[in-house]
Length: 377
Ligand SMILES: *Cc1c(COP(=O)(O)O)cnc(C)c1O
Image: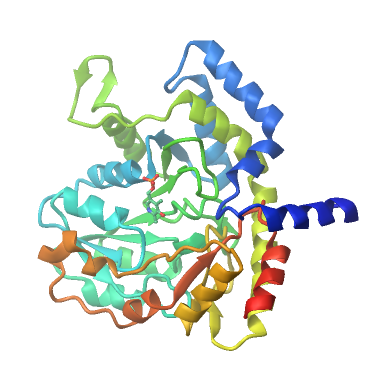
């Protein structure tokens, strides 16, 4: 960026409220490509599934190095479809992280399964392998691991545990499409892996969308069947399924954004390292630790602030938007009261009272945020 442009950006930033995720700037950057792709779909007469969707599935699978990718209507649907493909039955227990978005526990619960809420590692904030081990009983059928805030969960150990106990492993990579572990891309670590294309996720469309990934031909076939009313052939339904399809318009948007994902991830990682350097100069801040061998998509830049109420006041004073991901453990949610009475997770409780997420997307001017912060910290 030129000096003059940089100065202009800074001025604009002072005048305009910083968005938490700058989707407008992203659209502006890819405007011509997006317009052309969107017009093609609108003029094609094919609005659900179709050629654009098939191409996207190939490109998603190719990007991750997965054998199969199947698109669907949302990340939450993708989890539900995966659970149906694993043939979850009422009373089956599934181990889920206690500290994440509600979807994994909710989908298990809605299908009659019993979510078992595992504690987290206090530094990486990822599901704790020791806690997972403690929750295994004769009723346990599977583990849902979430790649929290864009970083992969500890898959080497989780895969070992799953194998040893004959459990399936579902990778929830809603926040981490494009992340890596040991050089391998996310969405390839579970027996089934899922992602979400909700607009503010690292790879987002302009509405709801999601996808499932698997190495298994038979699981891929079941997934396609379930997502399309249990039907392979028109008006012949082998099993009951759901209607969960991706719009062609969303597929077109995603194909454009996928081409830019790698450069966006580099920008996100650069932004995160600016924050890391900045917060290292102050007492009482601890960014989420990214484990050796992992690269994060930084769906969120999340840090623990020992004196969070003061830090939130400073953010407000500097007009810097923030989110609390997540304010309370899932086991404390009223909807899980019937299955969580005996849960107590030491680390989740304290992390919930310290976490804060601040803007980090590729179109965020993190230098200007840091400048503002410097004045109020
Ligand atoms: C966003 C999210 C989901 C759900 O995705 P939707 O597309 O909004 O249904 C599931 N799991 C996690 C961890 C998420 O962050």
